[in-house]
Amino acid sequence: MAPSPKQATLTAGHLPRQLWQLTLPTIGGMFAITIFNITDTFFVSRLGTEALAAMGFTFPVIMCVGSFAMGISMGAGSVLARALGRGD
Image (tube, rainbow, N blue to C red; front, top):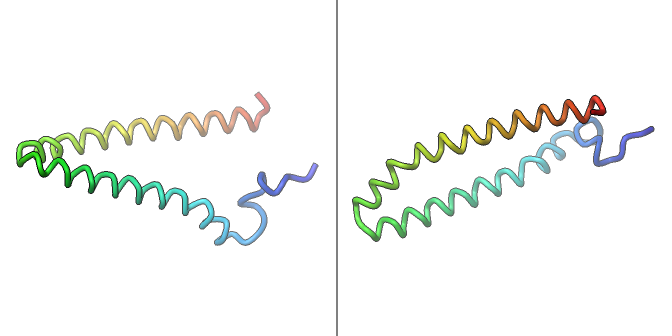
C-alpha cells in the first residue's frame, strides 16, 4: 500500500519547501505570543512600577511551568506515535 501524500510529508518531495511549510505555523505562533506579551507589558506598565516589577518577577516562573508542560506533551506525543506505529 503506497503512503498518501499527507503521510509521506518528509520522505518525498522537496525537503526545504516541506520544512518551511512545517515551520511557518510555529513562527506565526511565536510571533503572536511575542505581540501579546509586548501588549500586556505596555498596559501593565501604565499601572505603575510595582505592577511591572511583579510581572517581571512572575515571567520566569510562567516560562518554567510552560516549558515543563511542553516537555510533557512532546514526550506523550512521542509515546503515542510509537504506540500507533506498532498498531496498539
